[in-house]
Image 1 (spheres, rainbow, N blue to C red):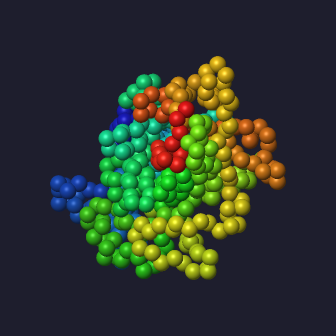
Image 2: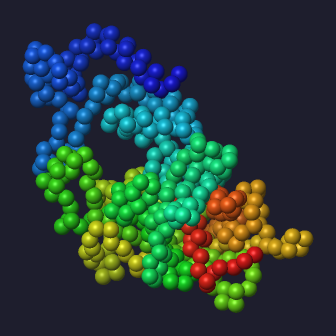
Image 3: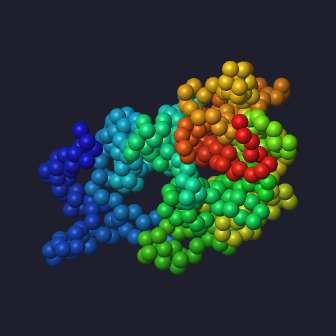
Length: 431
């Protein structure tokens, strides 16, 4: 039974119950219609003093809550409903029903967030924050990237390929290539509506050096500057405009990518190495875990600890500033390192080959596979070292596949693959 029909039948049953009717007259979350009679308006005004559906004042920090009749469902019944929907819908576009449950009211949203698992646990996406959470440990998540040359745009979709997924493919992330005098930026967004750094959909970027041989991945984080916080008056104006407040953010360097320069321009595969500062090498050890954010860093209440520089002072920066320095040496020494899997030379085909398990069909210098670069001192199993964490390859004109797994997230994997499009003379080979 569709979710809308299921909820509509619940509404009809609840409206027929006399106890529910009495609760509607005296309920704390009931909002009387505007075109009501004088008697009903007087009763609603008398109950509005105890109503929870009130607007926050300009000087208060209480969020605006407007809850309907579905907020009064018993928690046991509500938990059973959402569990049934979550168990039935395992892929998109049916996964939208789970997101719809979280959009009903606050009580529904809290229970839905408790039920929904991370991609590491279940292997699929639900909320946008899933794009910054590690992928599954067993099987990789299969995606494809579509390149639009005219607009310098790259779109990440969930699915095997455009031919197999068609219109049902879910768009995950969008990147815009911006050429500058000394570098090239790939600005990454949740949606492709607004390609500005001040957009609320902006979550990070990939920046290259002048030669296109080194890249840095920056993730958007809150600034935690008390002088830049919004005032009560600005919060009230923001509510009247129905626009979420913009929190000052900085871009933290969370990973670096380096390509080996090919000065002699000899033929051969690319050699690259990635240092993931935000992922400890212990995450691949037995019982190790990787950082799993639960919400986007658009609200300063998510993490109370502000970033601190080497001198123990908080950086003072404006909106959307960039921290270009590397993390401390203690972080670099424990960071996870990835290297490209060495290909083998095929005598019959006279080319370098890798086993992409049917996911790559076109030979290209951009094709690569990344594995963990473990050192003798690391307690990482041999089987874990041989697992391909990220693979990227070409399957058609401007169509590329991207398969990733734990401990990388979709955002990190997408940023690494975008570095393959930052072609410059120093790393441009022909196979």
